[in-house]
Length: 407
Image (cartoon, rainbow, N blue to C red; front, top):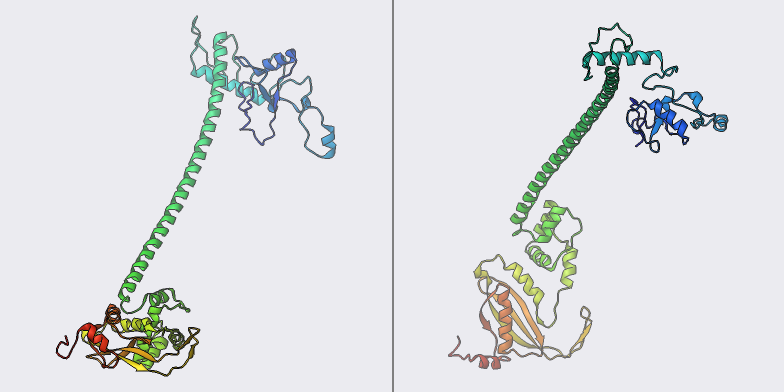
């Protein structure tokens, strides 16, 4: 960082940045360099290789005329003349040279006078008594010794440096205060933001708790698809097979009640066309009717045990030996001569439902047990089986059931 080599000059690069102050290097010529060093009035050694003197100590006439930039209207370069010497704002006046203004000389005399009054004479040979001086009088060798005079000059320079440092300290204190204020404002803003986020978080947590309670309360009434549709306010709902089977039961109980719940109350329910489309996809392949059993499971889930008691009745029927085409399965069926049909009938309630059918199939002990197991998994309780003796005589023999042993 460039600093002015002249004693008592407070200029340095960072302070004078942007103020048009330039720092000139010392001349290469040893003679001119010695003259510049004498003008600095420094007690310590000056390294002319790195030392600089600012432009505040040169007159405008010390600079060369930059005619090119002056004619073009540009900023002129400050280039010193070869014989330029620092002559302005120097610490002390040289003999025979008018290098400082009258006000500057008065200021220096006042500094020396204050130094004489405040400081004692450090001379080890004798203690000189400094008489009271008239205002703005220059101290001479007659009223003060030479050692005291030199010491007082040094002290005056130190006092001026101290004042400058005090001003810089005040500036730094003001800057630190401004920075602290800005920091406090930022902290207050961040605290306010954190407070808003915490309040929003609390409100969101309370809403989540309310939604979870609502979901728990409606689990036994509505399906998961219906609950999501209510929470997210969906207009288009993708129904599952479980939803369709439950809603088919409600639709079979009362068409008017179903439409009232759907259109007036606003409960999410599939439309009639959706139910028909799903019913057209019900699987009716030969064997166990799994879609039918799923509907029965949803129907009897909340029914008492008495209504879930049932018997299985099966019969083997003759059919026409024809060939038919199943459009939904895209296959040809037949020709078959017989079909085995199994019905589940309620004992305490008047309901019946086919649960199994197959072509050219004889009822066996193994097949009967498989049908009973699958029906029990759906919540129904099988208490008895009923059939005629035409096509099931072999089954009764396998089960070892006779007119005497019928348990």
